[in-house]
Structure formats: C-alpha cells, structure tokens
Image (tube, each protein chain N blue to C red):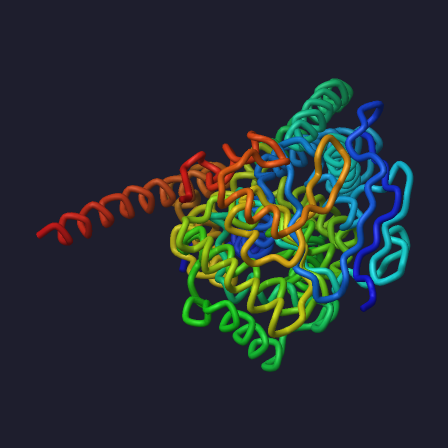
Length: 257
Length: 274
C-alpha cells in the first residue's frame, strides 16, 4: 500500500523554541489515524506543516511522494479546521453555498456553478445526512450540524486525504458519537484516508485504525489495543493525566460525556 | 418632478445610484472579513491624495485614487506582518493618512475645494467626474460578479480557499485595488468622513433579513440605493447637506429595523407561551 503522507526526521522550532524534534511517521492510503497529545505538544503545528503553511526547520514531509514545498495538488487534501466556524457562526451563508464554494477547482476561475455542481453539492450534504438543511443559514445550525457541513465541504471536492483538527470541539456528546460513526463509514466505504487530531482519546479509539501520540515534541505510535485496554481499565495512560482531564470537554469546558 | 428638472440633480441621482450599487459589494466583503474600519482608513488617506492633487494642480480625484491604492496596499502588507492583530494595520494607515492630509492641507490655497471632500458634494459633480464614476462602477461591478465565488470563499475561510485552489493573493490584491478606487471616488460624492458608513450600514441592514449570502448581497444593494435616493430627495427639499443626510437615513433605518426585530421576537415569544 502506498504512502499518502510520509514524514522523516522532522524538526520544527519557533525561533529558538523547539516544537517538534525528530518526528517520523507515515500514513498509508486508507488509514484512519488519530494524533493525540497534551496541549502545546505540537499537534496543530504538525498539521500546519502537513498543509504547507509552515516549512520544516529540518527534515522531509512528502504528500503522495512529493515534497510538501513543491506540492501543488492541494485539492487532494481536505482540511476541517478546529472550530470550523470560529467567528463565522454569523456568516450570512447557507450550508449549500459553503459546500459549493469548495468546488472551485472544478468550476474554475471567473466561471459560474452549473447544474452538475449544484447536484454534487447536494450529494455531499446528503452523504453527511444534511441534505434537508442545504438552504439553512450556517449560523442557525447546531454545533454538530455545522461540523457535518464542514465535512461535506471537504467531501464535495472528492479529496484523497481528510485532515481534521479536533473536530469534536464544541459538539454535543450525541453528535460526537455520530460524527465518529460517519468518519468510520467514510473511511471503510470510500477508502478515504483520514488524519485526525483529537483530545477525545477514549471514544475515538473505537473507530481509528492507528493512534499516534505527540509527547514533548516527539511522536510515538501507540498500540491501539493497549490504548483501549488502559482506558477501559482506567489505568494511568502513557500520555499523561492532562489528557484525561481534557477528554470529553467542549470549547466551553462542558463535559461531553 | 421638480427635483429632476435640474441638471445637477439628475447627475447627482445617476452618480448616487451607481455608487450605491457598488459600495455595498465592496462593503459586504469588508464586513465579513471583519475589516469594517478599512473604509474609514482609506477615505481619510484619500484626503492626503486630494490635498496633494490640489497642490500639484492635478485632478484631486486622481490624487485620491493613488493615495487610496498606496494606503490599501499598506494595510494588506502590515496585516500580513502582524496577522493576529490585523486591525492594527488599519489604525496605523489611518493615522498616517490623517497626519499627511493635515500637513498637506496647510499648503492648499483653495481651502473650500479641499473641504468639499470632507462631507462630499454630490450636487457639484462635473461631466468628467460623472464619466469617471460610471466607468469605475462598471469595472467594480464586473470584477465583483466575476470574482463572486472567490471573494465569498476568501471572506468565509481564507485557508480553505487556498487549499481549494483559489488564487488568494491575486484575488486579495484585485479586491484591495477595487476598494481603494471605490472609496476614493465615493469620497468626492458622499464625503471622505462618511463613505465608510455607506459600506457598512446597508450590509448591516441586509444581514437582518438575508437568508443566504446571495440574498444579503442583493438586499445590501437595494438598501444602499434606497438610502441614496431618499437622502437626495430629503436633502433637496429640506435644504440639508446630501452626504450626511444619506448616511443618517441609513442609520435611522438600521435602528428601526433592529427595534422592529426585537419587538417581533418578543411578540412571537409571547405568542408561543400562550
């Protein structure tokens, strides 16, 4: 199986402050990987490096075999940001308008969407069970529904990798469960490669195929069975007590369990 | 109608409606990018260009256009350097613009001409200025329609737009130029001190009713045209300054809409309890 993402000896620092050191991992096509770690461990920095927004201080990042510095086919990568609508909750746009916007590469510069693009948008919304909400203003949807629209926005352009930054932040407990089920279904049925940064170790462990842990700037792969057993027996988890306290809380600090 | 018998009023209506159609197109993107004060910064900077134009003996509107473009590019440049405090770039450029305008205005011989840019003089538009406004309005409207989906996506989520393949830097650059040109031309008609209100107030009104982005854009243009025409009528018959009257009508409408919505929500809440 070919690698969708390959990271070798990655170092990154902000000025003199090292953030990531000697990080190495690969994500195979069809993997569903979660990246866990305490606050400040460098998870979001790692995602920004994968998205080409930051350049490595040293080391290599390859996307589909191509160096991230020269990578051009960004439409192959779908990105769902943390708090996808941070500050945009009052944005006067419908779910349909937001999803359709991501079809830019298919529609083209200076061109207008056609019937085929509108149909594709509707299909993407139906894939995440949001078809009936296509004409609703995004600000009038719940946190879970907004996150589904963000997923549809990514899915509409048919990406090969979906990268999610803490997708369950601000989402109620019931919606978190169905969001994971949806991601699991997409991964299994369509073979979509998923890389997800999350604090929600316990619930996500049931759905992902691999767990990578960032700790003090280094990355290690955890045995998924071990993670599951330790969590279910409430033993001290190798990623530290801090993670447990962060699990199941939304952006407002409310328990999601 | 008596008001339309006069040539200067007919021009005022033509120019006013053209500007009312394009200012909210720029305004909605500015508002959604959380850069509402950009209009203020640019219009104040345009005064420096007006003063420079009057000193050098060139058309002050052209001076304003050049000053606005430099100011707009300056805001973008500073915004990129300090992205976490991007609003600071507006304050810096506005201060620099006001400072420069203040210094240069001391050298302007015809102070009345310079002052006409502060509150505008839509009824004193000449042929050249009317043609300039018509050309710029067509260019801005065409660019807005052609870049409709790109501007929408950048305003909603600049990072996602880049990943989707939108040429963010180029579109942002074009938009910056469009904003600068629109503001500098509008400064002559409605006034440098008022133009930013026309960018924001119609959009604020439209956002109270819009059920989609497209609707919000259309409503913003409708509101702006309504404020402009009503303002000109009221200013003519009540012998008021047109620029200020147009903006005040807009603000009064917004206040009435907000009060109306509040009352409507209380009524529907009360009806639900019964």
